[in-house]
Structures are given as C-alpha cells and as structure tokens.
Amino acid sequence: MSKFKLISTPGAKDTMLLIPGWATDYRIFNNLNIKYNYLLPVEFSPFMFSEDLLAAMKENGIKKISILGWSMGGFIACDIVSKYRDCVDEVIFVGVRRRYEKANNEKIKILLNKDRKAFLYKFYNDCISADSEAYKWFRAHLLKDYLESMPLDYLLGELDYLSEHQIEPKYLEGLKVIFVHGRKDRIAPIEEAMVLKEALPQARFISIEGAGHIPFFTQEFNRLFL
Image 1 (cartoon, rainbow, N blue to C red):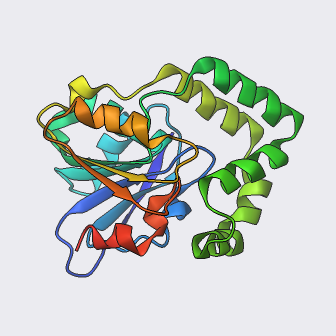
Image 2: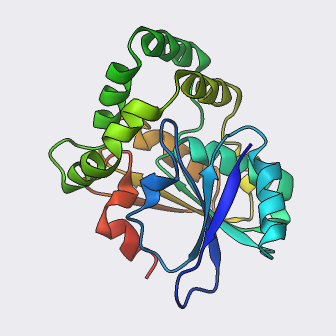
C-alpha cells in the first residue's frame, strides 16, 4: 500500500506526483526545484499504486495531476494513465526504457540474495557518476540509509513488478508527454527512450548532456520547468 503527502510550493497552481525508481524512495527528489505542488509517496509500493493514488487525490481535493515517473516510476505512470487517464494532465518520463527483461531481473535477484549491499552500491554508482557533485550529495544524505534500510524482500518484489510491466505507447496517444534522459545513462540506454518517443508524435524528447540515470539531479533539469 502507498500513502501520500502533499507539499505546497508558494505560487504553484498545479500538482505533480513524483514516483521514484527501484531501490529508492521519495527522498531521491529532495533537490528537485520546480514550480509545482508535490504529491509524494511517503510509503511506497508499486502494487495497487494507481488505486491508492486515486484515493489520495480525492482526499486532497486534486482533480487533475501531472506525473513525473523516474525509471520504474515510468511504468507506474503508464499504468495510472491506462486506468485513470482523465485525472492526468501530463506525464514526464525520466530515465525510462520500455521494459526490463525478466531473465535479467532474475539474475539480479541472485546477486541481491548473495550480497545485497554490494549490489546496491554498484547500482547507485551506475546511476550517478561517483566524481560528480550530485553523487556527493547522494552519498551525504541517502547512500548509507539506502544501503542499510532497503529490505531484501522489498527489492525482490519491485523486480517482480518490473518483470510484469512495460510502457505501452498506446495508452499515451494524444496526451502531453515529455521524455527527459541523461546522455550518459548506464541503466536505461537513451536509444530505448527515443524509440518510445518515435511512437508518440506529440511527445517532446529532451536529452541532458553529462547526466546519467538521475538527470533531475542537474540544474539543467530544473530549468526545463521555468
């Protein structure tokens, strides 16, 4: 079950749902600085997320929402649109690919069972360049807690979700869609996101030079929403 918290931003009129990726939580967005109110999943599960979101929107009096889905969050964003399209203003896909193959996810499960911390440490280093300012922030604020607190069962369950879902362009036809991708993404190759964009003529595609799998750590990303 997912539970949500609404954070108001002075002067913002619209609300954006922020959906994190695998092996992270809502705090991954702490440096985001765009002029929206934020709806954050402070308790997060990809399963039944759409239904939990609908209840949270009603509770907070939100009729329409923008969605930023990062990595695994992109799959959840697509699922929301497939079920509750009328509630969605726009979708921003960040660092996404169409699918993650089940066979590879099963290999990751083996590695996690063998040494969870070692695999996570490598994963986070693949997400963010270790010599960047973004990594320094991540290391100071999130890395230790993520390594210590991400339960194995939770990580394995999210991999099962990834094995069972993919981004289906047919659900996004005619909707305002933006793809934002780091040129140096080692988790989700930029070419796969470009193929998704080609299936959606109305979509925009923005690449960020020098950014990896978490391009919203860059000031360039924040400037996209000025």
